[in-house]
Amino acid sequence: MTHGVSSRDAALRALRMALARLTTPSLVAHAAQRFVSSDLGEGSIRIIAVGKAAAAMSVGAITALGNRVGMGLVVTKDGHRAALPDRIEQHEAPHPWPDDRSTRAAELVLRRVKAGAPGGLTLFLISGGASSLVALPAAGITLAEKVASTRAVALAGASITELNCVRKHLSAVKGGRLGTSVQGRALVLVLSDVLGDDVSTIGGGLLVPDPTTFDDALGVVDKLGVQLPTQARALLEAGARGGRDDTPKPGDPRFSEIATHVLAGPDDLVVEVAHALGQDGIRVDETTKRVSMSVEDLAECLVSAAGFLAQRALATKMPQALVAGGEPVIRVSSPSPGNGGRAQHAALLCAKLLAESPPKAGAEVAILCAASDGTDGPTDNAGGVVDERTWSRVAASGNDPDRALAAHDSGSALAASGDLVTTGPTGTNLCDVFVVVARPLSL
Image (cartoon, rainbow, N blue to C red; front, side, top):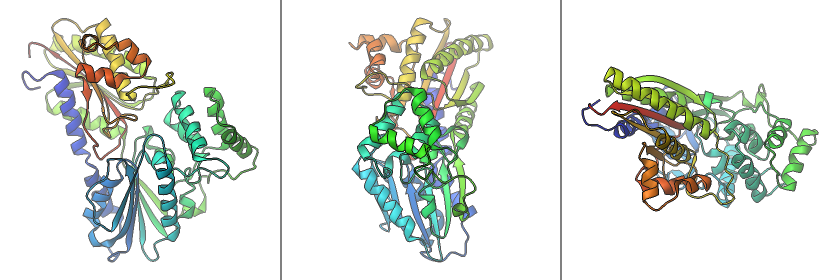
């Protein structure tokens, strides 16, 4: 670790280096060269890309395949488009909650899929966020009812797998339903923002069979105690009784011409952040690749690790670090949540615990909590990087940090203390990363 470099700067640098190594266009270009046959002629490949990283993934595909790519369609989050040839049509839609643009985008994607690619190949590029960006309600419910249902499940503290189980069974395209309309050969390249890289969960599993059922979706709703709109509940109950066709299941022959490959996921992000820290002379004591606990439990674990790493840093006279990745669960109790997201909330919780139990004298600690796509929750911020003085800086700014936590307004508090992390759209989406760095002040 370079002399005089702070723990927070080291954590931020490691994040930047990791994202640079996992650059989306390069990942896609390499995969396209590997999996796409070289005998496909000019214009015989079409691209359909959906997700927060859709535009960046399309850049990689165009770089590798050139004029073999004919027409293309990209649906991505507001502000995430990229410079692409005119033959690649780009549409933006909101995340995390769909609107009419999401429905129009889903209808457009469905029409393009059904049109097929005679004699050619459809290259699907899928990344996290697709569930909101293309949203076509199942017959019998409105978009407003679908959004109200998924929002209620999400804010009740559902895991991404639970949320998508419900969402897939309220959709006309998710849970593999879009895949049943694919004509001819298809290659699906995926960036994973899901622990374990479960392709039936990433982006709502648009193009792969779905192992979950209507019964499973009702089980999630009842476990969380969520009140769904009447028509949405009735749809799930009808499906559980066998009154509606369930999502297509593994082994369905309609998927025999669709090949799916995951390019990178949360595990890869953790490995690359740890590698970057090591290159800077920081000993990575531990990595944890599958964080799925509550944000409250995660904050306690990170702060506990910070205390241990601070002691070890002083004993060894070497900087120490821990890296974790995944998707902690957050339950939003405020009826009107403020400006924040999962990573920002975790960072402010860490700040509170660090203020209550500061690291051992002589050591400096920083904790970084960040969304790899650069947009944590419904905000334009990636997360926060905090230390034992963050909490007091928030208070000194005239803000009440406890109130910010209760109102899920962590982003406003971190902005006031100068601890907000803003990267802008990164062009990827590999879930969240959490980094603890401790160094002796004597370095």
